[in-house]
Length: 281
Image (tube, rainbow, N blue to C red; front, side, top):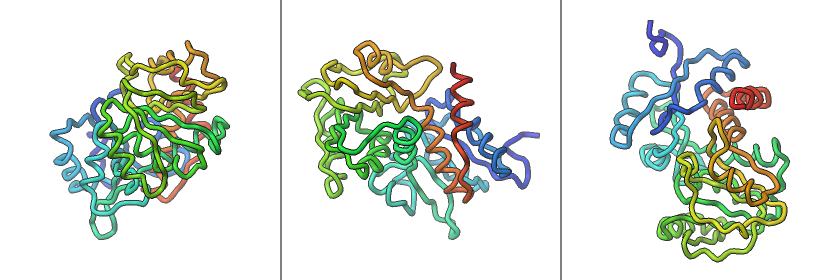
């Protein structure tokens, strides 16, 4: 019997392109075992052209919820009928489900997961720190939706195209005065925290970054993750970053938030993070 067709068990999935590397099925299976919740969670590679139809079909066939990863987060937001406050601010969604009235609902748990991983799991102080974010797409928007509430002294976004970064700045203007520049013309002082919100480092590429961007004790955080250190992590270590992290902790924390949205149960994350780190080691 096809596992994702077992009668009476609610199905969930992560959708993206690429998605083969995703650890989300493992994470949600561990959450289900821990909490006693019965569910099936799979991963589905879905192209940009297929995404809208896939979402409609998944929920028409009684799917319980979707996690959405690159490159679909902004489209997921646009498809939804209802939006959480943080997804509205981000204008991007990583969590979809059907409301009681059958309407498609959207949330963005990325920022909450990132902030929890930085501040709680890794004990990085955010208050009164200078933050630099690389990228202005859906991942960056999701992270910033929560980061703007952390008392940072400044937030700067660097992006390949200035127009996209400027649009992000405008969307956040009512809650935080974000500075924006493009990679080629950036002239910036050292920052305390640098977050890579692009997927470029998974392909072994990073944008042109000046090592002087790193303060003496800079924390560099790649929202992406892979079995080996990403290109951004390698760059940070070569140039003397004080602390360097990948996105495994964030992945687990945002998944826990999605699990709570869907199931009303909040799983513990520490053992799950440790399990994934052992597997990746």
